[in-house]
Length: 214
Ligand code: 2DT
Ligand code: MG
Image (cartoon, protein in one colour):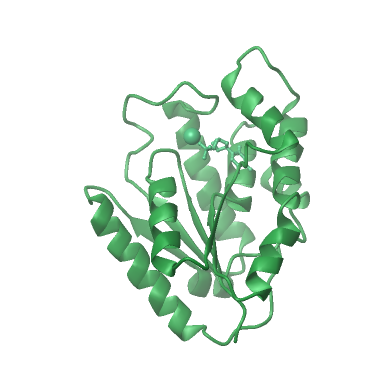
């Protein structure tokens, strides 16, 4: 039996990521695992949660960046163990959110290259589905958490795009990063797109055993 596949659902806020990640994990069966980042349930995740929800809780931008990264390292071994046992793992956000949100702050020195360093060595997803909802960042009604503003989301969108174009090997990008346009689609329609892309990928790459790393 081959190892499980690591499948990432990425995107801006309010593109339906968590809904789709949940539905995909369910469709993949009871043996699959769903892991959300940030994982707010750990000690490090508690600090991240406080940073996101309490405007009075201040941390240097570099420090919070490293906490988000550490939050991934906390479960890195667990993810690999699941995959080696043959379970598929669905991630809701991961390294790409890590670099795009931090670099979007525009802090001198906190560029994409610097941001990626703390994640170097983490497993790379076999498949990334980047959900994009045209103009999602322009609509009203964001939540109250840090980063949930239209102006900031536009900057995040630019950073995701720069990262995929300038930092990802183009052959990797072609085969392993799929952009799904979800504008005006229902949850079920988006799920159908997610599922057809995922199942086609899993068939084509059924035999991969090697792991890829950032
Ligand atoms: P959720 O709304 O998905 O809970 O995310 N973020 C996330 C970062 O800035 N760096 C990271 O490494 C990750 C995983 C995205 C809460 C916010 O945290 C941002 C939105
Ligand atoms: Mg959010």
